[in-house]
Length: 205
Image 1 (tube, rainbow, N blue to C red):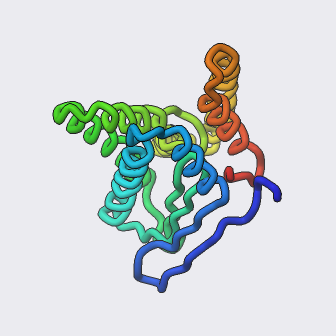
Image 2: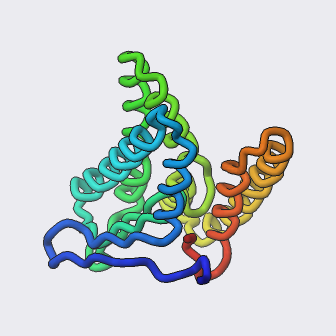
C-alpha cells in the first residue's frame, strides 16, 4: 500500500460541522504514540493539545467569517479547509493561522501553573513547532499572509519554499544525528514529512 493512500472521509451535510478525513498515517501515528506511551499519559495529553489547537483555528475561522468545510488528520498534524466561496482576507487568514499556536501556548501556561508538566511540555512543543516558517505549518501560513499584506504574495510563496527546504533539511540532519545517538526517530520522521509536503501535489500521509 502506498504511503499516499487516499484518506477515509466522513462527509457531513452542508452547514454542519466540517467533513472529517482520516489518513492511514494518522492511524499509524496513534499506534506509535500508544506504543511509546508506556502509561505516562503522553497519548491522551497529545490528543487534547491537538484537539484544542484545531479548535482554536476553527473558532477563529468562524469569527473571521470563514466557512470550514473539511478537517484532514494526517501523520503529523491536521489541515482545516475553508469554503473557497467565502474567502478570507490576508489579515483574516493570519488571525486563523495564529489562533492554533496561541491556544497551545495558553494551554502550556495554564498546565504549568497547574503543575501538569507533561501537558505543558506537549502543548508548548506543538505550539512552537507549528510557528516554524515552513510550508504546511501555521508559521508558513503566517509568513505567506504577511507577504500578501505587503503586496508580495507571489514572491512570498517562492521565499517560503526556499526557507521551508532549508529548515526541513536542517531538522533532518539533526534528526539523523539524534537517531544515531539515541535511537529516537521522531525528529527525522517529522523532517521527512515536512520535506514531503514540499513536493508538488503532496499533502503528507
